[in-house]
Length: 428
Image 1 (cartoon, helix red, strand yellow):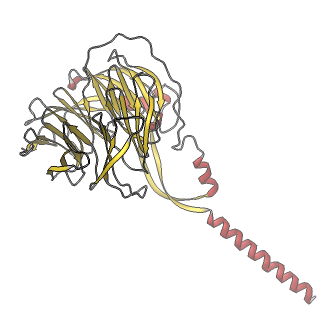
Image 2 (cartoon, one colour):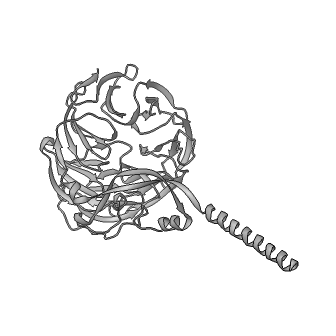
Image 3 (cartoon, rainbow, N blue to C red):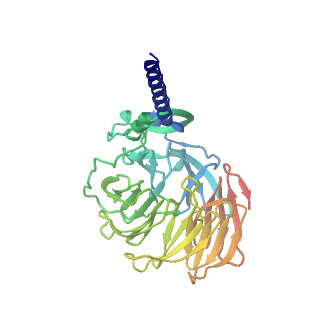
């Protein structure tokens, strides 16, 4: 009996150890995550909110675009401020275009192209206070969908308008389901491409975008950049855009900058140059790699200027301006890097290079010798995000502000105006 009892105890002990170990394994596969639960709304409902409204204050400013005497400034995910800049010393905030989900814009003639989540709108803003939607291209940016679909029926399309953040504990099995869920934020490449039909040419002219733009107009084509792809839209008839080819570009593409027959693409993972000699069939010429950093890029044809900003998300620490030899676009070579605080958008006028450095303001540098940049002016007191330079004027979109400088005399740069709330000038 004693022997049998002893063996039984040993078996019970062994069973207990196995159960305990199994519990540990099970517990080890449970993890606490901070998750974002999407708040999705029907696209057709959001479209009813598109309207011209009275001017409102600049708050969460995004992209900047200049067309003739108009300045357009994006209010992130809400719409576009329209500013009459006939007198740069007294700009007037004249209208707000309420466009839910808007982040990017471009213009050809009087037609404004603006994204609304997954849609592309063609809007006549001859009178910004009474804008007219000329045409809508539905669901051309499927990365902005809350629930993936290739449908073009706005009643069956849902976009994410907000997020509910909370902590949760999930098992490994549940996590694997999330990872493989088509409608849980992981979207395949776009499908359902429609090719061009013939269109008569136009003489309408485009405006000028900032360096952080995702839209670029070259001749009669609008290039609309997505995270992995480039939609090419025929705008020969500006009010009747026609969706055409989709070209795939480098991963996590963020910005686009046109120079002659080249598109420079800035991405989290590198910079690419695309040849658009054949405008509907872009060809990759070269790309340079880096690890997970913001990447606005501009070019003057001889050099490419790239700003890289550190990312806590990706554990990167580099904040710098990189200058590449772009004389041979099939073999771009890094010439030199310069440290900055947190470089953002940039612009170039002749030998003058303008770099937005976030809370550290705007730096104006002499780039006559790119291996030896010289600081000419350091304009502080603004959180500079992006800049457009034209005719001796620098238009800087800052955090909640539009600031304009006259740099026609580089030794005596003058503040022209700062506009934020409605028509009110904050300083002059």
